[in-house]
Image (cartoon, rainbow, N blue to C red; front, top):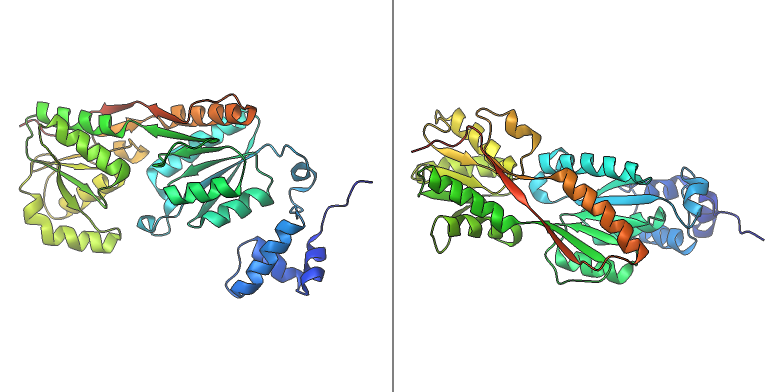
Length: 334
């Protein structure tokens, strides 16, 4: 005899709570719910394999046809992670590829690895695409779950059933440095909020192309208001350079706006280069020279890899995709 699907009211009766409280936990409305109650509800949901009624029969099947895309809500985004140019372009590309492959996409923004486990198990997901998390998160997820993962830009030791889909960050930086050198720039400043992982690779590539042992580096604050005050204090030092390589388009475009607001012309007074080739690059003035990573190519690879991982046919654990310098009007020839 087939077991009936557990209802929300069944969970409420088991715990002696109202259905409203259970619903609030499920939908993340937990401001007025104690941590102890949240934990009890989450454990009961998982213990009873509760399936949200909106998903009904589909999620009760072995194959839900759902791929989760989870983005780390890093503090640098200040609560606007889905508005970031790279993130929004990546989601748009993934949406198309996932739909064409006959799957459904569900998106979650979080900073907690255990929220990913709950998200995936509650919706009976077949796989995950993870963007922006760190090595310890991937390790914990691998220990807690057995579905295939495809990771964007991860930095961790190769692990079975996790494919790390990266871009050639070093070569991207190298192309920037080679281009700036060809345009007559030797005094180049790299700006980032850190000097680790992909940002370090981009800056090292730029320094190598310029013939430097290490990059001239200025670390900028994560928060926007602090960053703008920092630029004000460091403006004279910044203007000692003829070009700035910002390791993301977001920082590059923000810097252009700041400089122009202070009467400094780009590229007449200083040249700016970004990284990512987000849609805003053609909308800013001047249009931004940047390094393009092909989000559609990466999305296509991600879904192809997921299908191969699921079938047990994917031997590659890390794949590196190429990048291309896009020359626009934000760099002046000296």
